[in-house]
Amino acid sequence: MNATQEKLKAQVEQALIAAFGADFAGVDPILVPASNPKFGDYQANVALSLSKKLGLQPRAIAGAIVEKLDVSEICEPPEIAGPGFINLKLKTAYLEAQLNAIQADPRLGVPAAKTAKREIVDFSSPNIAKEMHVGHLRSTIIGDSIARILEFQGHDVLRLNHVGDWGTQFGMLIAYLREVYPDALTTANALDIGDLVSFYRKAKLRFDADEAFQETARQEVVRLQAGAEDTLHAWKLLCEQSRREFQIIYELLDIKLTERGESFYNSLLSGVVEDLDKSGLLVENQGAKCVFLEGFTNREGEPLPLIVQKSDGGYNYATTDLASLRYRIQQDKAKRIIYVTDAGQGNHFAQFFQVARKAGWIPDDVELVHVPFGLVLGEDGKKFKTRSGDTVRLRDLLDEAVSRSHADLKARLQKEGRQETEEFVNEVAKVVGISAVKYADLSQNRTSNYIFSYDKMLDLKGNTAPYMLYVYARIHGISRKGDINFKELGNNAVLLQHETELALAKYLLQLDEVISSVEQDLLPNRLCEYLFELSQKFNQFYDRCPILQAEEPQRTSRLVLCDLTARTLKLGLSLLGIEVLERM
Image 1 (cartoon, rainbow, N blue to C red):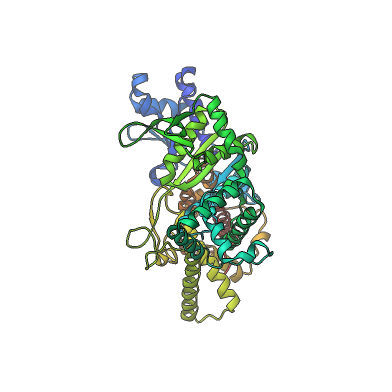
Image 2 (spheres, rainbow, N blue to C red):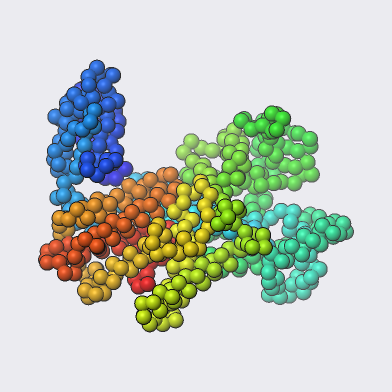
């Protein structure tokens, strides 16, 4: 709820008490943005909900409230509509004062969170010795945007990359590494696996075809878990090779992460099992140690257990996740822990969250949140794959977006007869291409699947990154044409006269409400919707209101509106991980 809405809500609450007595303190005035601008900006619907309790018609209740309602500093005189809606229209002078107040504020009037918290965002999380693919796209982009918004709100955010760097598959990989790269185990910097996916596939083929190799791989797992120096060295080489590949992607996407893989918690796993046993939750079932869950059953309708130690004594993902959860609460002191993964893992999170709560490991002031997301689909509506049916490598996907953006820009420059340097073309193509991919993902409700289309995401029209980048560049084009330095405008008074100026002003003042809602609900698409609507409202203002040709003081006022729009777009896009361009 933004500051204006909070003020109005408080005033309606006071009027309700003044009209009907102290018993109505705390009653929600049901103040919401008006569904239709012709009725005003906000409407209070409380009168309809009180009719039965008060034994009065809603219009009579609304009349009594309005009689005691003083919103003269903010609104025009309230109006009662329909069966008892109280409509409130913001005063132009109030809007002007609000815009004048945020001009000098780098946060554009968005207050920081009242209570800063230690928050963890667990996202991206690829597996060592495998390349990042399209399946990692959503976790990486959504997690980064959530982290950016929480950081902007003043929270102490730990961005964790829970990479898959431990487990039985490493026995296979290390055994294969010994065979094909023996020098790597004795010589520094001698390893260059090249295509990690190819290396993994070859190791898997070797494992599946040779029982002797399978036994060798199992022994390597034992040696790895026991801390054998040469096996650990091989493991570190594989991890480092993967890390270098991951970092190329993260730099391209401008993603900052702290890596803390599954191996980090290895020494804590036995303690998890011991403590669950002490708490009386542990049950042995077919040789495995389990915790039985409420609300989860197998196909036969029998209670479903969460296995925390396998019959062979090994541990699994659930054990590691429980250990990491305890560490994040006890050592990292996190108050909200956010996991950004595909929706298919929903049951896993519900299960190990339940076990942790049963064990008493989750303090009352700690919130656990699974942020699920849907699949990336191809234009055929099926899971996004290459023409050959392989999973799409994330690096290839991003390179293709930049390549297509480069071709689009070249064609546009030729059509416009513009000459630009190759350096300019390459930079714009990179920013637009990467931004298009990010925005296409973030603009969808994350819980839904979405169709990946280069043509749609790179379109200069519609709800796309290029459209908003173009609006931002258009505003800076105005400053170049008029030789205006927005930073030197100072704190000039905004004067709102045209209807498109008023519409733009009202929307600029909703930024705090949008960011606050994303901070709570972790739905970045709401910020995308806001920025798209803002861009449209600016274009309507631009089309109908002269700016550089306007007379003073209107000219400067409109330049201030341009500047506030550009700054809002830049801030909003930065929270989505998107860079802006002053020229396109």
